[in-house]
Image 1 (cartoon, rainbow, N blue to C red):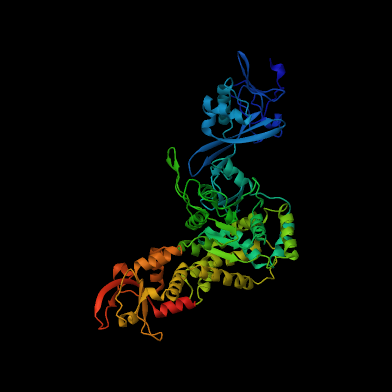
Image 2 (tube, rainbow, N blue to C red):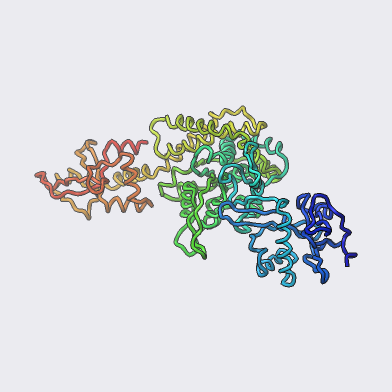
Length: 621
């Protein structure tokens, strides 16, 4: 019976289960390329045939357990959910295959048979034998099977001790690992889509070629700023910076997508293929939310807002998807989702969203809350559209198709190796932001933007320290001056409070017959709410102090401009533009409307009142 088996030889330091019994088989001595530790053995009575199938010997004869060599190559645990996993490794078709499954999959016959879908040699005939073999294999190799932790997010681990760059785990030398704790962390996606997304974070080609391209592109402010912002993502939790969005807005075929792909190439495969982590806006909020939820210190890339389509079965449009996504990114939380068992737990994420579009996202919606959460750079990234700029775009494409995924992990390793400097970086960030807020007459939106610009400003010297080959002759101040002024302008022009008051100014100019004033009183024209929508205390020759609009008039005006009254009057009140007296919820002022030529008052109305000084000042700005 034993002649069909490879001749066994005694091994050192491996005790036999009973006196006089053959020593267990060291797997590495039989299969040199087996993915197991040197001291890993087969359980007692299990043997390897010449064809490397696994059999079990008993008094009644031999039983084939697996026609392929099959081992447990790793045990792992998800620290967040508490789930335990086993990684099975088997050799078929001349190469090794790995599959990580929940422990329950090798615990019952009904579960383990399902693994045949992955070409694991299991059927209903050998299922119970295989379960027994794997249980005994784990018991006899308790000290030999590697342990690992599993995370369902990419980027920083919860304790900031390491960083999952795709399926690769990066950690620093200062992290002390307990001998009883795993020193490796693996990514485990919830489904195949998560795994494919993680596969995009990988390296190809060589780093020096990518650096040469980067040095050429540092001449273009928007491209340079995009690269630095992409590499700022791992620093968000270290500096204590909120998530934000960087948008590149330019006409079609102007290089904005190439700029986005170059920024992404710092981290991995920048193509739109299935093996990449770049996506377009052609999706649903569920899909985008799921992707964002995977990230903890890695950037998110979505190309072309024009691809944001109408929501299926909902009366909602692409502008809603873009605005909702910007809100979600800023909040750092995806919306809750129901499951068959109840609901998914909400977990925060840290990321910087990169978006492109022909029209600024700020113009897709008049929702004011999203506007302070975007750095919007409108303009051609390569300064002009001609043969020279086309040549640069083509060079980007040809280079990053083959050389990518080096700068990001290089920076992360530098950050991990200099953990002692994290408090200094955070202090420098606070000082930089305070310096940026010293400009006079900054709006609340501009004040918020300083948080994001300060983060990128701190990241730039760290990036250059981590990647010495990058050019350092371009003054950071010059780069920031060019980008900062444009971003401030876009933020200012996107101020819906200012837009709304400009709408009021336009309405005043084209609707003089709908404004009641002392001149109407002199003409014995009585106030009528059906005819008039505002009262203006203009005595002539630009001698006036305020104008007050009725609620129906303001509601109608703002509605026609896709603005919300409650949001606008709240913004006006915060800016100090409303002239109030504490009546009607604090947004309106009670105004006595004069009646006839004798000056008697016919009624008092609550109006939204804007003083001359505030109206003129706001419109002028």
